[in-house]
Image (cartoon, rainbow, N blue to C red; front, top):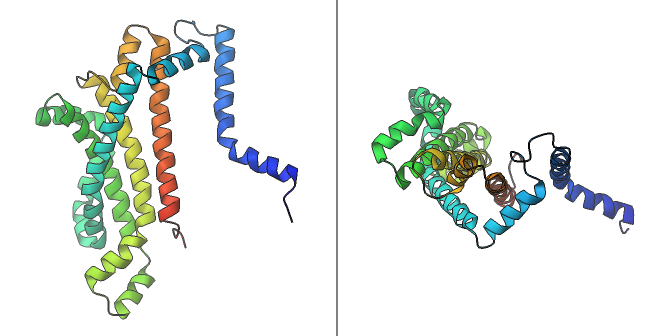
Length: 260
């Protein structure tokens, strides 16, 4: 039986659901600027901000800053994954080792990344290395915790079945435990890439940057170029949203057995 027109419309509305919140936000913003609830110098209209965003992304300097932030974020995330995933598997597979370093992991995971800026400045100086290193550090702790948690909570029955069938300890770890931990690992990776983006943008604001979205936001604010500032903020927000959607799509495709 073919779906009716009403069902088609309902399905279309369901797919467009994420847009409703954005439309309401823009409508409220437009009303606030039309009524001049806030000084127009401080809160430009949605149209002015959209024009600045379009102009900057279509061949303007905003596109260059956007790419610089993407590069720093992805590089710090790749470093974090390369370190945290293997280390998380090792820690999660041994309760004794994990308990021995649990305090250190939780201590640094609970410490705001911005509080670590002076330490990384001393270690790496003012430059690209500091921004990437501090972002990788913050992302790695989140990923490490989630990977270790996923390994520790892997289904014991499947591990036992693998051992009964003659699998070695390493075989159980790589062929069963690793795959069992993947859903939680992807949770950590999604959180890690979001945190890396936040840290990179904050670092671009305060650690001697000459480019990047963070530097653009702070410079626009200092010269009261508000449409440019809002355009940079929206570009950063769109980047974070797209990265989250990308990892959700990858997770649904490659970790479809999660929870089963």
